[in-house]
Image (cartoon, rainbow, N blue to C red; front, side, top):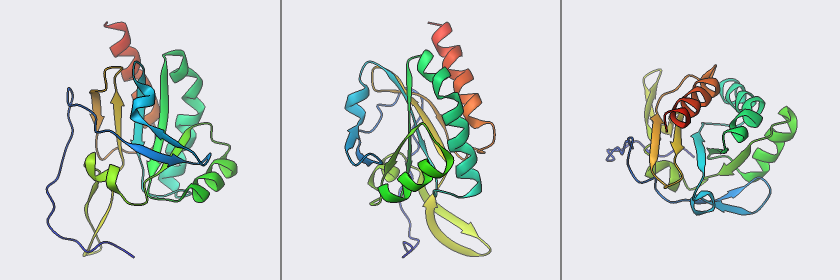
Length: 168
């Protein structure tokens, strides 16, 4: 069932903001939280739906680049409103190496400002705006990308990580 569109205050996080805390169930049937990544970088990316073309492209690209991200000391967590069971199927079908978390309540998506009103063919509804956040070791947003295009995005995030780490 879709949420009925209504006016909601849109939160857009920006560089320097404290990353909202989260604790989500992952595909391995356990919870992870932002606190677990204290002292390390984490890429937290939000996507609309498992096994759809753009989301599959993005997940595969992040998975292929995971060894490079890890060399830089960065972990990757993808979040969608899909169930953990859906995530397990998605991971197995595409041999993904990244962690996928479930936000079925959309609570975390709202905190990060990615659950927004969308329009398609004249119809209004709420949905996930594909977005990515690079969270620093201090728990602050280092970089926020909203409305990203899936193709090539993981490479751009890795490039940004390398630029940030090389500049100090």
